[in-house]
Image (tube, rainbow, N blue to C red):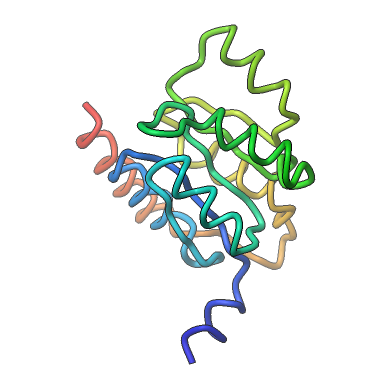
Length: 154
């Protein structure tokens, strides 16, 4: 039963209109989490209305509804979940940082991120830092993914 299998792992929602970014996040996280992706804020909110997630990895700059729209939705409808939002964005001007911090998100990291920085931030946001969980991926696979990511983004 697929649904039973899915519910065994805590679910994370990466929200990003950049497909390679979503692919890398999914590859990095799928061992320990069930992953559902959304390509913009509108799709993210639809998923947030029907599913529960241990964390949201949120881009700020997206078509239709941007990351701030999602943060505003959470603030109005599920403020506790803001504490488990990891904002991953290229928009890191001082005013963006200040604006994001007003939402009490868990963490904010820049694109393009170091793999370890990203994984540590996800662990921080999901409280999955217990030592028994082991590493997410072998370092060889992480280096391969990082190289693929660099090539796609340059």
